Structures are given as C-alpha cells and as structure tokens.
Image 1 (cartoon, rainbow, N blue to C red):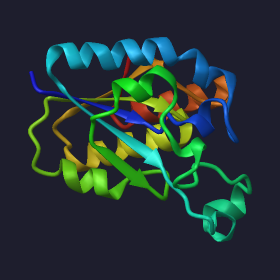
Image 2: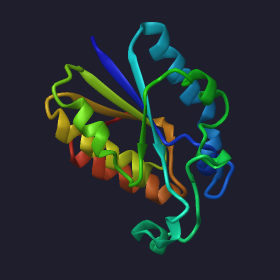
Image 3: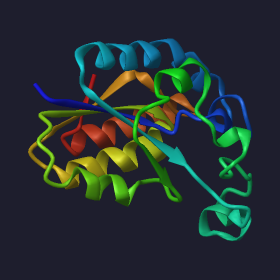
Image 4: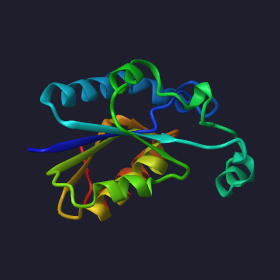
Length: 172
C-alpha cells in the first residue's frame, strides 16, 4: 500500500518559540516514531513549513495574530528537535497561509492509498491541510493520528477532530 506522511509545521516557533505551547513538545516522541516507521517502510514523507516574511504584521494573518513567528531565515522557522534530523532530506512545502495550495496541486494525480497528517496546530494548519488533501484526492483515505498532533487547548483539539470526522477524515 502506497502511503504518504505529511508533517505539518513542526517548527521551533510552534514548540518552544514565539507561539510555543506544552502539547507541541509532548508529541515529539510519538511524531518521531511515526516518521521513523514511515522511513523503515520506504513510504513517502513530506513536510510543510509555516513561512512568513518581515512584513508579517501587515498581512491578514498578522493583523489577527500580531505575534511574528516562522519568519523565513529565523531560528523559529526551522524544524524542531529530533524531527529536524529525521526530516532533513524530505521535500518541503513553505506556506504563507494555514493550508498549502502548492501541496494540494502536487497531490493531484498521485496514487496514494492513504495520506496521514501529523504535527501542529490541529485546529488551524493540520485541519486546513487535511481538507486540501481530501479535495485533491477524494478517493484517498486521509488520516490523522491523535497522538501525533497538538492544539493549544484540548477543546480546540476535540473540535478539530469532530469537524475532520464529519469530512470523512479518519481520526485514530
């Protein structure tokens, strides 16, 4: 079975930087085990990088979330911890918004039987990219492992899971 793992925005600024939160650090071991498992099986792995410029505060997102983060070239833009080493050679999709249109276009025509997403933040970027995967490949099973994603609050995490399930995205 051909599978794809998408590691969403597991970057320093979301773990221990400008927007860091404890749950993001707590998933590191499970997330790295997931990456290692896909590597051992010879499956495909890609990652997304939240990517902003110095003009962040003037953007729509910056006006609603006025905390500069994941500025291209900054330490906070880099992948976090052990995951950074595991993902050193994987393709990366830099994205200026919650979802990656480049990723969705790249997926079109691919023949994956399953796409699994992990990373942060569940109720923002993970759900956005899961929906784009489902739109790009509607007959492909899209899955999110609840032990490998994190949101700032448990309420937000559970709300995202509920919405994903209603969109036929499997939550493990």
